Image (cartoon, rainbow, N blue to C red):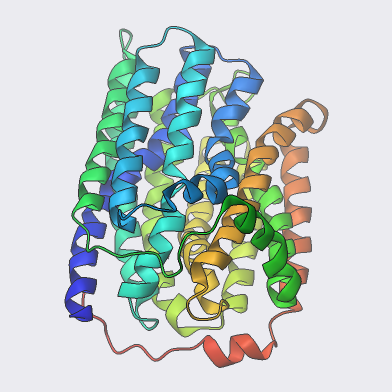
Length: 411
């Protein structure tokens, strides 16, 4: 029965990944492009758009407590959230005002960012430890394909003289709705633990790291790493689109930011999905850090189309593995049955750094420039890597980290 449920989940989660890839490309590239080129949005609006998902992660422990007495299962909660996300994107498409547009996109991202904390229970209950990374990699590969397909057509369309950004937003909104449909039909899974009150959830954010010092050390390293990487996210598009940067066309930006990025991300996901199940997690994470550091330095210092493309390709290789690590790493560390609680802490802190780092990046840009920001980012990533190194020989990773995988089926 469990195997059948796992196969059913995989068959629904994989195509959902395709539309999730359209959403990812939409939020990371096209919505920001629309804000820059169609709305001429001020920096605070662009930073808010970039910080939308992390703000949702901060709110996650409190928003999830609103489901406390609900009988709705985890996948079906995801379905409701995706429908609301779709509605907010559609509302944004109807707005001529940049502030209302920004507010709707912000609310859409808050809904979308609740999905990981719900799906971690689904993955941990229905997928065995030996194949979680592999099965999630299937979803991420199709996500990359969705991003590549949408980037080609949306980028080409937005370069037309009479392009209407509403059509791009409607395509992104429709993708969110499709994700909701796939979530709705997933096997019903209740959270491992009963939902806690908002006060208890907030206390757990402090209590769990205080009791688990290894977890605390990794969270500190992840916080430093996050600031180093996330503050460059909106600046990547700004660097390509702005006249003070490279001023590429929308199609060129889509080709670099999505097509090249997602192509190498697919390669990385296919490789790292199996590596995650087999190798020492901290060594895996450290290798990804070094790849991301190299990518950022090349991207912001090359100054040519080829150089930026190479930096993007390397970033894609690092991000594919990083997505798997970010989604599943607590399963390598958390006591059985407490994955959601550990994930809640991780998501909250991801939200803290993610909601502040884009503002920090824009604030420092005028002083340091793109090259200076890349060097600062590299220093922070290196500092995080040194902290990760101190955990490599911890016995908890040696005991739980390596699994023998015997060619799991596709779904």
